[in-house]
Amino acid sequence: MQRKLVFAAAAVSVTMAVLGARWLGAQQKSATAPEDDPAVAQRASTAVVQRRAVADVYAADAVIESVRQATVSAQIAGTVTQFLVDAGDRVKRGQLLARIDTRETDAQVAAQRANVAQAEATLAQAKVAFDRTQSLVKQNFVSQSALDKADADLKSAQAAVEAARAGSVQATTSRSFAEVRSPIDGVVTRRLMELGELATPGKPMLDVHDPGALRAVGSVPQFALARVASADRADVVLPTLNQVIAATRVTVLPAADARLLATQVRADLPGTLPAGVVPGTAAKILLPTGKADKLVMPADAVIHRGELTAAYVIGADGRPQLRQIRVGDPVDGGEVEVLAGLAAGERVQMNPLLAPR
Image 1: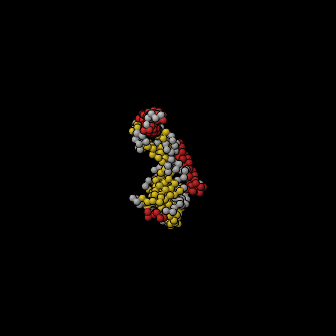
Image 2: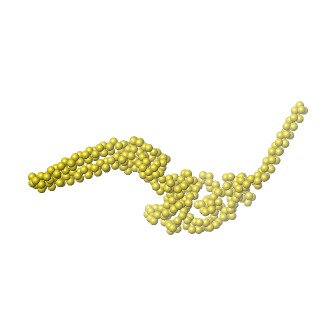
Image 3: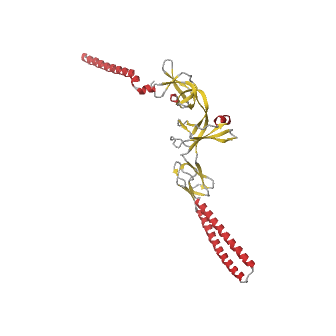
């Protein structure tokens, strides 16, 4: 019994010694890690909220659209028999997209060809009759009025041939409309019909847009038009992608919408864009209007979680505390305007999601 107690006491002593060594090592590591690890030091950096003069802008709500886009419609009536492309497919100008039933147009082509043959036969007969009448007039066997009638019949037959040939060309052209082709190079945005549906002239079948030429289109109210009318540059903000793109060209249209009391502004985007920038994406066009004194903070210090916008503010004890804030539009230098929640001189945590707590 005494031997068992001795063994148990020895085991407890060894365990306590091991745990004590581990605790000491952990304390030494935690005491030296912040100074020795530059990544941790970088994540623990702070920035000062300050008020300074920045470029003032007007933010116009906008949407991304394609500069070159087309709604492909049917030009003849008929049942859709085949689709060769679908939404998301890349197409070339002139590429076959769909086919429409051609039985009716084939019959029209055949009928017009028969009309041409009939008109040409009538023309040949009228020409023979004119030549015969002309010969008889020279021999004084018929009067001049008979020759005039033969000449009129010949010209009428010639006109009938021309009309029949024009009708044949028209029927052949209509037959070609049964093959629906792309008017531009681009991507099929959506398919608006299904197989077996009746296509009629003007009824949309497919939407196609060129993804290499996009622009942001927004509206500027008339009270702000004087400040942005001469703008020659702009930034396009994509909130859903957290991207800011410099526009290659800015155009303020010279006419206003009388119903909305606003003027349309267009900001052309560069050819190379981040993934996800597609027609219909929400955007803002930032148009410069001069300089303004604003309270700003680094954008990297802002936390977005659903409807919550916050930042970690360094308190008097040196510890960060989460505080809800309200921010405005981005400004130059990778900063954002602070609308509420912070005061000038306060310090905020940079890269708050990576910083140690």
